[in-house]
Image 1 (cartoon, rainbow, N blue to C red):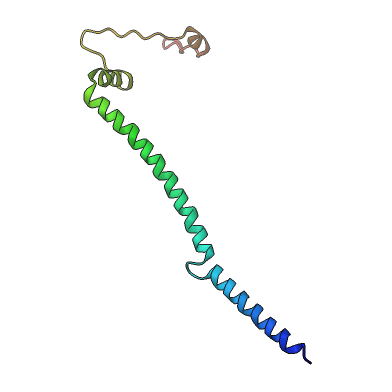
Image 2 (image 1 turned 120 degrees about the vertical axis):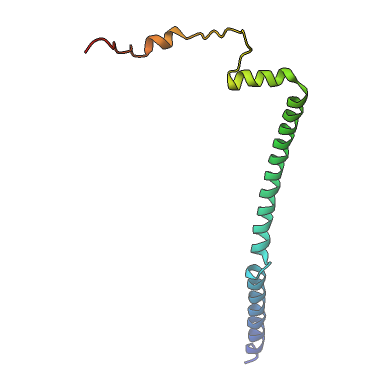
Length: 110
C-alpha cells in the first residue's frame, strides 16, 4: 500500500488548508470583517462628502445673511409674509381656481 502514505499526506494538507481558509474567512478581522468594514468606510466617506457640501451651502447663506440686508428682507417677506409699514398687499386669486371650488352655503337659508 504505497499510495496510502501520499494520500494521507494530501488529505492532511487539504484539511490544514481548509482550516486556514475557514479561519481567515470567519475569524475576527478576517476577510468577511474586512469587506464589511470597507463598505462601512465607503458609506461614511460618502456621507461626509454630503455633509461638507451642506456645510458649505449653510456657511455661504450665513455669510449672506450677515452682510446683505436686502437678502434678509427678501427672506422675511417671502417666508414670513412681512411688509413694511404703509405698504399695501394685493393678493391675486386665479379665477379658474375659484370657478372649480364649491359655492359657499348661504347662511340665511335653512
